[in-house]
Image 1 (cartoon, rainbow, N blue to C red):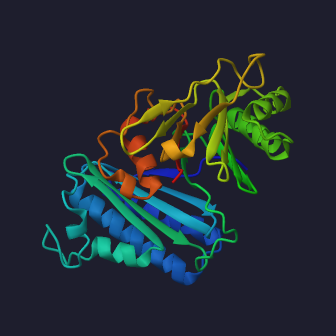
Image 2 (spheres, rainbow, N blue to C red; image 1 turned 90 degrees about the horizontal axis):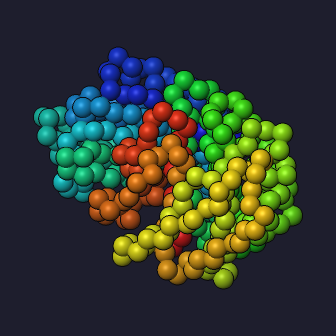
Length: 339
């Protein structure tokens, strides 16, 4: 099922910490994480909430079960509005503390996590990423170096399911990707994106435009959606992309080059243009491809996140979410690291 990738837990009140820890523990337990992994998870959450209490003026924890070429994992992202850190490497050293504690927090979280990363800006806040895999890390089956895709999809507050979603699949050296936003929110919007995912899965076409036409015919009985389809070809080092509606996509490189993808007007499932063409982009020119639904303010940019390109792409997704999410709708930020 296509749905939110992460659940949001407000963490600006200490009294709520025990509830969020129990809920995330239960999520991992239901996914059959073993006792050792659950214990590591509990300790990571204890350290995260302790840091929020000591340093932050407001916080949020995102938790989601996902999978990649290495296996299934639980991802925890801690976002705070605290003072930030000028020197993350220094703070990572065991014994360093600004509050007369033992100073083992970040180092402990890193040791307990299979993947761990931190991004912080002085005066802005800190984002901590912990990824705990269900099983021992697998060696990827294919030797092909696929792009790294890190999604962050959060349902509107009060909704059980999300009207935003992402679906991707690989065929040989081509990765096919769909980012969709069902009209409105809630169950009917979620139904539209799941019908689209089913059609995307069965589509006989490789061209993004032809896939969009196929999706259009397949979801006519739903309320409809907007979305972007991309085909990332690792052999030709190129991307074909096409979109309809107000899901945004930007190509970026770390030298400051930015290219906005322009989608066609319309609603998939209701009305789409008769004439559309795939846009072709060379991977050689760009490091990142970022998608955002309209749950993210339209004028987002990443210019102030100096050094984020050295971090896990999920931290960039969380930084955009932190600064630009409207918090009044389903929200999605998908970061694709191309090279």
